[in-house]
Structure formats: structure tokens, C-alpha cells
Length: 110
Length: 356
Image (cartoon, rainbow over all chains, first blue to last red):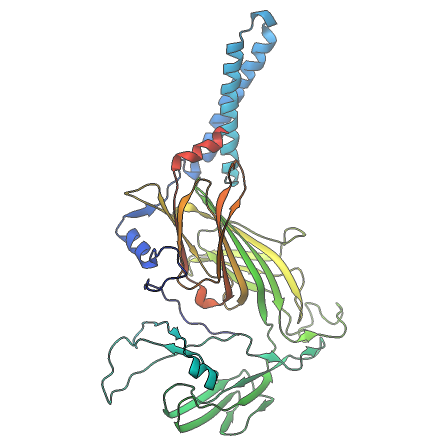
């Protein structure tokens, strides 16, 4: 149906009513070449998502188990609220971030 | 003019437009042409909707024929000493305007015309067989979601139509099935797409669910993922189909950060379709940046029809993610270039997500 012209980079910035601010395309290429701009690296590399997920979830589950055992073994008067709250909060923290990294490892990026 | 492409600039000339119904384009040559010197130019023009099916409606057994009107003279603001136009068709035409024409099988030559004045035109008509489908995307919407955990998720929505000769009469599986090659020749059975080389997690689905009739192959020779899709049903003339194609890109290939100012990010994406050689009447690109991105600038290598900003809501969002919507009309292969979006974002704010 069509035959097409090869593509061409637009380098002129004069009369730009259509660009918000003229960040020249060739400038980005030059910025990359001159190493002023580098590829983005995520804080955690994607290969490590599963490890982080496993470790965080494991620690989280350990804390959760400790919490349950603590609830079961001691009578109400012997339990300390501060300890309960601390362990609960810590386990929630670890389980939450562990689930987050688990979702990241399966491909659900948030 | 060497190997360099020059893009013409459109000039507004109302008198020419009124008198000759013509649009003027200006081309800056790369160097001076001295008097009595010659220079060679290769001009490429792309048209859409020039061929129309004639007859407009055909049955499933008939072949599709198209007609086209054209001007065999070289239409320019300058006089032309000698010009010749050759129409290359797949087979001998059913009809061609005989004036000044020489037919050699599928090649029809008009001319040579000598000493044409400026804006010379005449009308010729060609009517010939073309049994290929005419795929057109009535609407394409692309959503690009940027995640600073290292991934760009892209989902395209396509409204595909086969604008060849419309099917009239009966359609049944006895006359048209994969074993009968001679019926429904202008049906659209498959399409080829090229995705970026580093794409992963590719899917092809529609409202009903996943469509399994597709193949994808990561080809290092062509530096792309070559994908072939077959719609759920072959599209006969006048039929339509909608589908989604989605894929992911690791952020390190398209997202860049400035060394001196690590809050300054550049996102580089393709501005064309993954299907080459097919026109989209309307192409909408939505870029969703992470929540908290500010000072957003964008740069396209061609003019846009419409730009707007909105908010998208996704996981862990409070005030929404800044979303830019770019609309381009009549997208062809020329638009297959790259565009840049530049924004400022504080990396530390993504730690909020796992903590929540």
C-alpha cells in the first residue's frame, strides 16, 4: 500500500509551538554519548527481587509466628502491650515489603 | 544529494492554493547549485486513501479491483524540460487512460512530456486488480507506564478495519476456509509487528480474552522482536476487529538519568506504530509518570495534533500519577521515530510503596 521515506531527526528548534520546551533529540543522544546522562538503575536490580522477597517474607513469617506463639503461651496479664505492638509492627513491615518484592518478581511493577 | 534525507517545510501560499489547489513545500538544498549545473533529487511522497475499490462491494468469490486517478506530469512550481512517469502494477490493468501511454505488461509509461510549464496537470485513470487487504487502524491508543522499580509497561489498543472492497452476499465456512485459496482473497488473515528487542511479557488479547494465534521471535539480526498476529477471524472487506497488544521494557534501555542532577530523568520511546506499512487515522500516546514527577517537558520530532495532561490512579497512589496524552492524526511510517519526555523525580519517594 505505501512506500515510506526513511526517518530523519528534527534538530531545529525555531518556531516550536508544538514542543513545551525544546529538549533537542540530538541533544539526548549527545548527552548519552558524552556520558552526562546514563541509563537508569533501579535501587534493587530485577534479578534480586526474588531473593529480597524470600528473605523479607521469611523474616516476616518468623516474626508472625513468634507473635502467635507469644499470644498463646502467656496469659493475658503476663503479656506486654509494647512487645506485642513492636513484634506486630515489625512483622507487618517485613511481610508487606516481602509481598511487594514478590509482586515485583512476578512482573507486576508498581 | 548524497545519502542525507531532507524534510520539506510546508509554506502557506494562499494564491497558489486558490489557483492551482496545490500546497507548496520548500526544500533547502545542502549546497549551492551553480548556474548551468545539474543536481539530482529523489523525492518520496506517501499518500493514503488514494486507491478506491471498484466495484465497491464484491462477493466472496470475486477478486478485488481498485482504481486510482493521478497526474502523470511532474507537478511543480518550475517548468520541466522532460518528464516521464511509470506506474508499476502487479499485472496488466483492466483500464488505463491511453493518451501518451505505453503499456508494457504491468508497467504503464506516460510520456516523455517535453517542456511542461509550471503546475502542469492532466488526469489519468487506472483500474487494475489488487487482491490484497487494505488494513487501516481507525484508532490506536498506547499507554506507557513508567515504574522506577525498573520497568516500563506498554499496552496498545487497536481498532483494525479492512477497507478493501466490502463483502456482499453470503459468507459461510464452506466457501471460505483455510483450504480454499481462491475465495476471499482480499481478507486480512495476519499482521506482522516489530517490537523493541528487549521486550518481555508480550501478550495479545481482546475483550473476550487471550488470543492464542500469535507468534513472537526475538531476532538479533533485525534487532527486534518479530511478532505475527492472526485475529480471531479473517477480516473480509469492510470488517473490523479490536485487540490489545502489551509488552514490557526494562527501564535501563529507555530511561536515562542525568549524572550531575540525579533527579532529572529522560524517557525515550518510539513514536510510531509497531506495525509497519499500515496507517493509523488517530494515534494517542499516554505517558504515565510516577507519582510526584514534576517539571515535565516533552519533545517530538514532528508536530502533534493535541496535547493534554491528566491524572492516572494506580497502586499506592494518593494524588495520582501525572499523565500526558499526545494525539497524532494520520500516522504513517514517517512517524516511526523517537520522542523524549523529561521530568524531575525524587528517587526516595518510591520507598514509600513497599512500606505501605
